[in-house]
Length: 114
Length: 113
Image 1 (cartoon, one colour):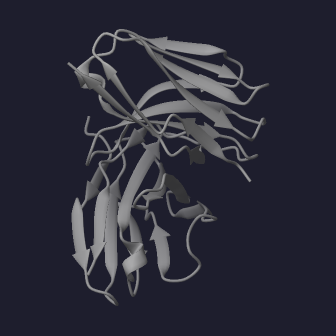
Image 2 (cartoon, rainbow over the protein chains, first blue to last red):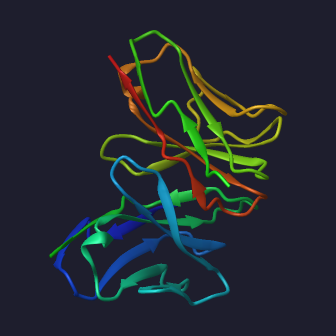
């Protein structure tokens, strides 16, 4: 059974701090891993998608890494801002299907205070 | 280019009624996924559809739930005889092909009285 775990469940930091969100997964036969952002009452916004052949992806202040051997991914946010406050979800695409069936973690609730 | 559109945004039903949730994928997308987010739980896969075909419904409860994606019109997730445990946020995502979905709607929040 595929499981995705995110640590910590919640994180509160002052503005300007660099931070790391962690995601671990049990299925090593991973096709790709995706990080999403979810604002209250809203849908999901895809932030970064890492294919199994890649080790990391970067977009602006965000950097995501993927280590298949250890079953881990991290999302690094540089110089955090209050606007980064949201729930961050990681989702793996694995399990032998050839299509995008995602297994999500529970999320990390991030609060960046001024 | 509008994103994935879901309606209604909020839906209130009494126990035993039917709920119909609609999802219009992004233009040019013919693959649709439905996910459910129960209170205090993560998103769980329900069903994956292509136009006129259900490809994978392994995450759907066996009874009362059905989904369709007709040739014309939106995808519909239908819940018959709703119960309190069906209260959740239901999200739709679409993709142009079988690649993982990166575009999600804002969800339908279903409340059962």
